[in-house]
Image (cartoon, rainbow, N blue to C red; front, side, top):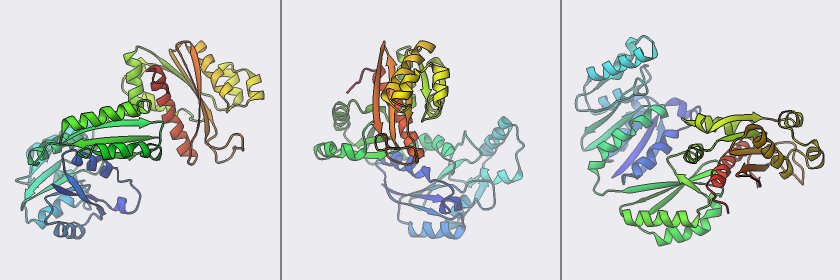
Length: 405
């Protein structure tokens, strides 16, 4: 089955909002064997939506995102209905759920929200447990028109119901698995990936590169071929594979620490608390995370962590010796099973020939040993700090699992 994803919203066209819904939807559809032939952004108007539907009249699946809000300019549902000459009727169950949402958040429901409960009679309504705008699947003229809300958090909550509806329509069953890779870049892996592309012709292998990490999705109609390709990949790139792609790097770290009943403490300089923030974003982090220090100045490192001043004078704050001592002193101070320290140069100023912008040192104290690591990250100040954060979490996971190179 072929499909189109149509993102509706003037804010998308103006560049005020990033279209993350496309990167969410396309892999989910592909996992069912649905090929996205077109993905585009259009303005929230009846004219634009009618023109799009007319042009895509032979496509079996069209997924709209956005334009389901309560305001006058949220016109997706009404425009689809008018194009196909469908009558919108009030769905009492949806109205009750919208009312219940406002009661939960302690706000009165306004008359403008009433239209969010109106649907064509034959529509399959997708409940929205995260907002006020229900979605819908409308079968009409041999097509399936899907309406999903624009906010990504709300859209993601409807994906299980959407996939449940679409799965019986597919001629073949597709299987999908994904792996999260950190520590190596896509171009770095590409030479070795040629063997996978040629050796597993019945498995589609798609990389989705992010900042400091890559998700590899494996899709095939053959479960045995899929499992074999994934096993081969994990064995080939075992030190870089963190785990399944459904979890973030910080979720893997928290899970690893919880499984081993271990705790972690942090000293951050260049990352300025970003590592701690990622960890505490994971439910249950309190079981493994006790304390963190953001020590940016040299004086703070000496005063708060007892860093040897001679190290600063001889080697500087951005050095193997500095992060080693910070991690060791942190372990002595906190008693945590894992102590991590990070120091580097984010730029754009402050770099030298000996210590260029992007240079970052890491140290991990674990099981009585302190190990140091050095990386040179590309990018601007923000990118360097993000890459350092992700790599630090990757190091913790690797060290605790004893997955050393």
